Amino acid sequence: MKEIHWYPGHMKKAQNDIVERVKIVDLVIELLDARIPLSSRNPLLFELTKNKKRLVVLTKNDLADTKITAKWIKCFKEQGFASIFADLNKTSDIRNIIKTAESLASERNEKLLSKGMKVQPIRAMVIGIPNVGKSTLINKIAKRNATSVENKPGHTKAQQWIKVSDKFQLLDTPGILPSNYEDKKKALNLAIVGSINEEILPLEEIADYCLGYLSKNYKELLLARFSYLDLSASNESIFENIANKRGYFVKGGLDTYKARKVFLNELKNGILGQISFETI
Image (tube, rainbow, N blue to C red; front, side, top):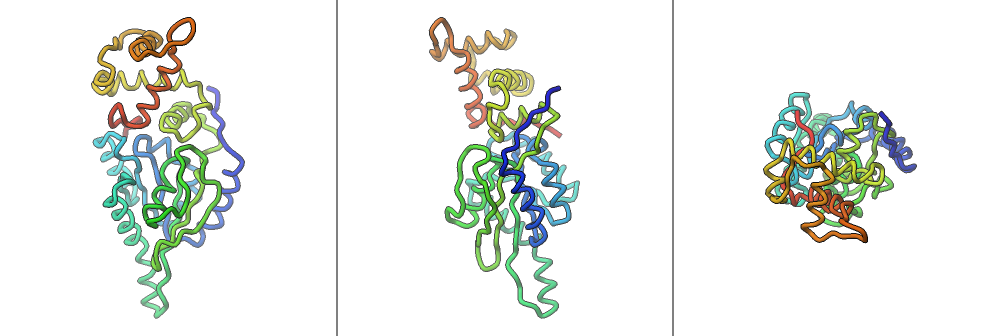
């Protein structure tokens, strides 16, 4: 199987910076996409930060299948990691992240106090792949636009410290992907949720994969959105049907490319419902 390569130049520098900065942080907050917890974990980042206390946050919980997300939380906790899920647009979820992070890092300050030393601000490093919500989380915690946010992979290019309060500092880091994916399914999953550019894989292939997955695992949601579809038909016939129903035409016939693109956008943005692409 052909390996999928996606590794912009800034990611190598960011990786080296993390090696240096992780030495001075108290806690690592690892963000994973709740829809694809395995595919959205960079094994290299995990290895580089494995000796630090870790809080695993499953983001975009509002887009994921809640029953499956609960199983993932249980799985990570059984592995010894503090784990919570979050919709980063909910204030209550942001407060929960802060409370959990402070609790995990409190041991260090207790040791300082026991030695008569001054308590230092908690330093937390936020890590994850592109477009998983790192900058959004930091801005919500800091209650200001401390770092820019854009819904595309590879937007954050450099690390920066964000002062949240006198007690809490966050280190924002760029999203870093492995240099290649031997498992093509993981690359497909990342393309579905927007963590790698769709141009890395043919759009037709991504859409056909999603259609097959939903037909098998979320048939009710699929037919709730496209009640007129015959799921026993070929993929091309199905997208021709969508194109015809929605009026997507090009010179010479139906625009199945646009039908696939709109289908993927609706899936990515949660219009088809709460869907997870990885199970325990």
